Length: 303
Image 1: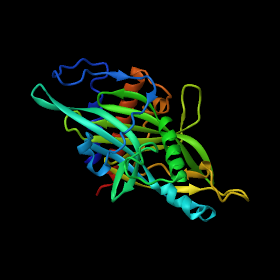
Image 2: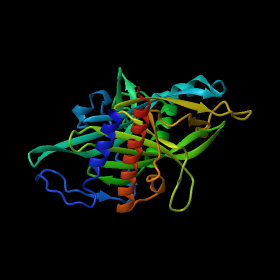
Image 3: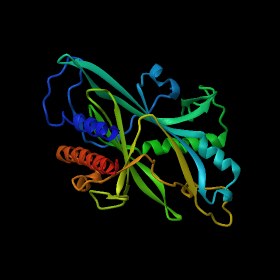
Image 4: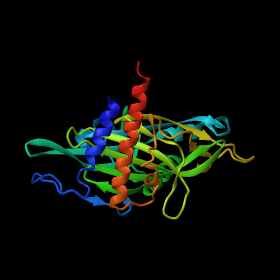
């Protein structure tokens, strides 16, 4: 059942692309933004566990990284502590208004940032705001957090409508025993009728001037509020490598949820570096077909 829910939510989220809708005065005008831009950042001080108090209706995901594969013993103990200290977080705010007497929902905002465990709660912070927020960070911790903030600058929103967002993040991935910089694509959408969030990610590799290439045969469908146990792979260093460099750390796998193979309709557009309106409509239609095909396979396995 949950797969059919995801299919319906995604199909409905694209009704406004190229279609004029009657709307309430406080419902946003349907729009499509296809210019690349930086992802909005979460304001320092937001407490993840109490996000509604700060104007965010949904936790999309918070990532709990840890060194857990490869040459973990080759790096000093403090490296593992710093690797786990700051947790990538995505929050979303969904709003609603009545349209023709029924509630309709839209994706008002999506923000990204890094949170730190402070007194049993995860608080969004930056290296410049840490002291004012009560975080005692030394020079190394501030450097690690600053490096994480630089990674946020590389996250690029490539498509946005009033009901979905697609953004890319540069990601160091484990390929065999080596590390390779790749792209992790994120799609977050909201059901117009229920306000429920959907969340998909998939991995992309280098390709042509206009398109990456699919790095895996499937996407991952993740639940809203996903608490990811992110295992970090450590590569072997040289003889004088006790002080590890960032390139020695990489994701072991993409976030793991329910694997969704790419449908034939989706493959031509899933790895595009930029979209026009028709590309975006084909992308969403292709994902809808992918989810439906996955549901059909699950149904065949049921007794």
